[in-house]
Image (cartoon, rainbow over all chains, first blue to last red):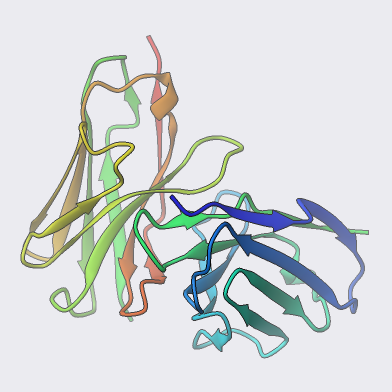
Length: 107
Length: 115
């Protein structure tokens, strides 16, 4: 199985901050990397697919980059509704696997 | 706008069979794969498996011996046999887009396995 590792596991930030979350795959997954946002008690929500494509309806302050094994999710200006947990998922080969999540908390 | 609504028993005893169903509303059922994912308390999401409208499944090898995913008209189901406390989790159904991302999700069902 392809192992997905995120860093950091948690971070504290203020409204308006630029936030960057990293996801690393245990082998190359080309650009088959997706990012999700999850709030407590809710299902994950797709933000970014294919490493850098913004899902319809997702604000443009979210962006993704990377290919191969190293990927980044960036929130350009953190908003109050962005405090949540973010996780990555590889869709290069089954079994699809997820990162452990990065919790973004209010500073 | 596709909507997924799931249901099933939320409390099971060890060795029983978990059974969940997910109905798809407002979108095409054919042409997609449909997936089950779970999240144990405090842990990462785990992909269980998927199925297409024709009934062709793919399973996570770690669960393959206990899992069956089946399909019916505009709905799909999950059965997980011989459950233990380790199967306690929130179970989600989801639609698999062509790039293998999960773009629409059910509301989730908390399944607790306890004697």
